[in-house]
Image (cartoon, rainbow, N blue to C red):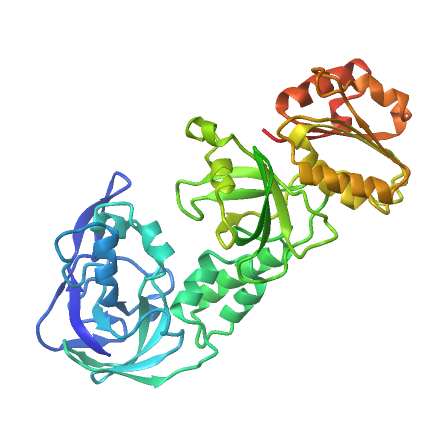
Length: 454
């Protein structure tokens, strides 16, 4: 471990969001020893106060090992000059997966303590000539700031010696990953708070994230789920069984709810799709989502890239998701209203999770279903099994060859109009037609729960 380059910067203007600002991020290598005081290197310009305090951001170091990575990632032919990322010390042998909050090192005759990771700002974008900050943060190759425990001098070629380390303190990689990408995990946030000599500003920020994660409905933010099983339900539908990529427990959900899948993760160019959960709320070993998508011949013209992406996922691949969400109607036994469910084709998917929740809660239930060629056959088999276990449940299959063969008026023949909970699942056209029919019967749309699978 040694110092490859000592870098300082002067003040110069850059344009950030159409506004000229001063920055000291343009740093160049210097020859000879450089004095290090409590607030940084001699000759290094500090333009503005650091959010976490100047004393906790006195010296910024960046591993030289990342230079080659960024050269290839950005397709740059010319080698970056040392100091390219705004670091005071370009170092070797101190990667973010190893360096921990609170580590104490001797650089030459100067003693520095790791304070916190570098979180990039728009000035780094200006330095790199592109929108680089999101890439930089997502890579977790961010470098780290030091506070000065013992003033001295540093020079190119100085060796670096580890003096103290708390193995229970998080690494730089862990800190950035949890604080910015896995803040749904309250246990991991609590571990960050155990970091040795944690900067007060960071403690406040992590405590705030922890408070949100503990009161979140499901979880707070994006969570990575892994495909552990895949079943082709029909030519145009597939069921994916999902578990937490970190093997943490999944959160409870209600029948008829959905998760939001996000392509692009935490990046700026996200694409989202709500996917209904078709598994049982009583079994949280996995989530199952059943996705309806265009056939392979239609993929090229698909207007739904998320569904097309999901259709191609294999076991072991991962996706980012928000927690289960969406309205639901209580299924507690004290609510004696009779569930009436109207579905067409793939609309059976959100209704299946509701049926699992209704089992043991409702002795009577009516399901009107119009089959289609592209509906998920495996899910229909599960519904038949549920009906066999619940003799008071009645399933009425409509004529698949007759358009609009399910009518709102049929509901009145099976249950008192004033004592039913009505759920409609299918395409937007299917839902809109039935809503209009129920309005003619003086049933308000507010009395309906709708599940649009488009």
